[in-house]
Length: 372
Image (cartoon, rainbow, N blue to C red):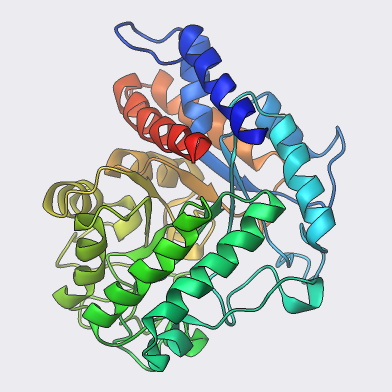
């Protein structure tokens, strides 16, 4: 039934002019396009009319949400997830407020990095490191499929996984220390990641490669501030991205907030047109959706501020701006992001053509999702 409803909604959008073919977008159509570029986190195990995310979705037409099990700002274990039945109700209610089906996303990598836990009644799966060390490629497929099944049953359609960072630094605080990399061998990373993706795809779940162009060598944590990999990054870290893209298995790619003066002497990857447009789009040939890592992470928010970060990310080529709204909580953050994008368009800093490019990529994937 949900598939039928989604397809009907897409046909309605096309017939009502939202496909935007052959004409300049009216203001209302521009509002729709801009809203689809924003993904936001929120508080609440259930929705009521005064939850700020309802206005984000209904009024600002935000195109996606991200779910968390913990509230970092409150240091609380209560955020969006309590159990399977509660979560399915929450995601259904979220979708009911949106004219265009939402991307409902989560970080469910397996192992340490998971939002759906055994204590909540969800299946456990191995970490990427455990899967890679096992040498069992079928285990990676089964992990992806198991995660896909649990996400699908909960009404979640997008998983920010797999991590395809190469494990180049055993002391890396955000990759190696958390067992998030399949291997220190780029070919093994690519092989296991593809198998994991196949498992997700079998259940109709969108995957996302992260963190481009490779976070595995870093010594710092971009959640906390400026992270420079100029002296540690190696070109072999591009191999998993390149292989998975060339094999046509990459739905989305997430950028990393890491700096490398060999790529760009001024901006970190998320804000760098040289990295996103030059390296990922032109050199690697990726035509799908590019999503930023959390724009509230200090490597971006602490260095550039809100409006400048939004502007630079979009100009660099990002299609979806992710605001976890968890490191710091701000009611109505989705609406703020949409308003900022509208202001940048009014000021002539971002063109309607640039917005439309991202919108069309987003809608292609949403149509594909509806048909799966």
